[in-house]
Amino acid sequence: MSHRRVWGPAFALCLVLAAPGHAAVFRATVSGQQELSWKLDGTTGDCEIRHGIGHGDVKITFKSSKSALIAVAGGNVVGSINAIAKGSISGSFTDTLQTPCPGFGPSDPYSDSTAGCGPLRYGVRVDVSRHGAFVYVAGPEVPLGPVSIAQSGGDCPFPDGGYSWSTSGDRTACGDGKQVWQRSWGVGGPTGLFASRMHVTNKGLLRVKKGSTKHLTGRKDVDCTTDSQYTGDIPMTGKLTYTLSLKRLR
Image (cartoon, rainbow, N blue to C red; front, top):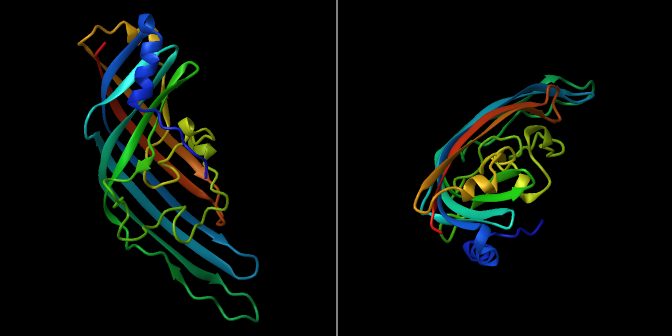
């Protein structure tokens, strides 16, 4: 498991102090919504052929519980905003015999647990950072309070869930990346946000007057197919929309 560097307000302010003539500090909030749907309908096996079929949906809205600091300095934009996500998750998956293997008894049917389906409520840390020409926004799940209550009732069918129909966990076709700031937590989740980026220049942010607020809108569409042990693999579709509101302090 890789270690993650957390850019916090203290580091952001250090950047500002290092370059006072070309720096700014903003008080930031975030809100948005995200949806993800997946489906599976295929067969697997060489001798005994089995049929897997399933589908699911994850729908959330998220909003920052309080504002946080975002800094613009020295070619960087850095900061993290804590938010609370609320919504629902649903799904089903069954694996049944289609063609028995000659000379062998058929395996039993399998149905994935739905104990964890239903309401969702969990924490999201919205990380903002600049890399090259783009400002990247990533949102991993974080504990909500002392103990995370996300999925506390068990698992709900999902490609990377209990039965794990995915064969490699590779989500690059869905926009996932190797770097922390490129990670699309929503497609490997089901919790977390899709990775997104926006073309925002530091020069444009520095033009914002002190006391004024700039609203930045972001969006990410997911339309991909991930690998699976079943024929047809796993089509996934989704959409993320959000607004970052930045009020300049200095």
